View 1 (cartoon, rainbow, N blue to C red):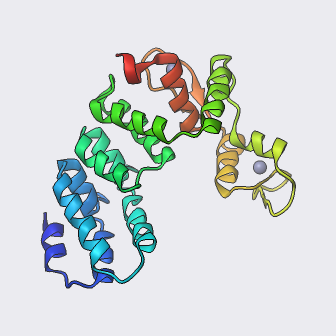
View 2 (cartoon, protein in one colour):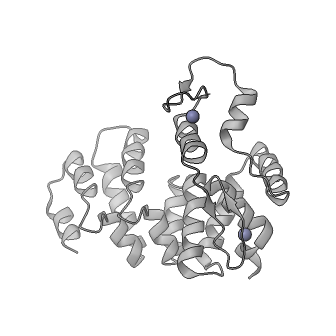
Amino acid sequence: MTLIKELKQSNNKYIAKISMLKIQDEKGNTLMHIIAEKGYHNFLKLILGYLYTCSSKNLENIKHDIKKILNIKNNESYTVLHTATIHNHKSFIKILFDHGYISKDNAEDAILVALEFTNYPANNAVKLLQEYIEKQYNSNDILEEIVQSTIVNQGNDLTEEDNNINHVANNGRTPCTVEGCKKDFVKRESLSQHIKIVHKGERTPCTVEGCKKNFYSRGNLYRHIKSVHNVIYFN
Ligand SMILES: [Zn+2]
Ligand SMILES: [Zn+2]
C-alpha cells in the first residue's frame, strides 16, 4: 500500500500523478493493479475523478493517458482488467466499462485468463464482460464471429494475415523480417502473429480439459471456447 500513500502525498500536478500511476512494484503491478485485486472500486472512481479535474488538458487526452496506464502489464502479463476479472470484481469492471476503458481484445483475453485461473466455470465478472463485448459488437463483428466459429468447428483456423492477403491492396505494407520470406502485412500485429505461427510454429492449446484443439490467436481460442464448450454461460 505504499503506492497509495505516495499518490496521496504527491503534489497536485497532473504529470506527477500520471507518472506515479505508471510505477510498477517488484511483481510489475501498478497502483491500479493493486486496487483491482482488492476490488476497491470507490478508490478507482476517486483516482479517475482526480485525473479528470486536475488538468487543463481536454478529456480525450486525459483518457488516452489513463488507457496507457490501464494497459500496463504486470510480470504475469495481466492488465488491470485481467486482475479485476480474475478476482471477480464486477463493480470495478463496471466503472472501467462506463468510462470507455474496456476494449474487445483486452476483454476477450481477460475472460480467457480468468477461466484458466479459476479453472472454470465462469465467474460473475466473466459473465459481465461477456455481456459488454456483445453490447459493443457491431453487425460486422457478429458476422465475422459466425464465420470464425464455423471455421473453428470445421477444424481449421483462418488467421488474420490470410484475410489481409486476400482483401487489402499491396501498398504501404510491412514486409516480413525473416530472410527469404516474401509475405508482407498491413498491420504490425499481423506480422508478429505471422512470425509466431509460420516461422516459430507457435499455437495456443485449448484450456478445457480433454480438448486437443489449438489455435493461432487468443481471439480464435476465445470464440472456440464460447461456441464449442459453452462454458461462459451454461456451466
Ligand atoms: Zn515470414
Ligand atoms: Zn476446446
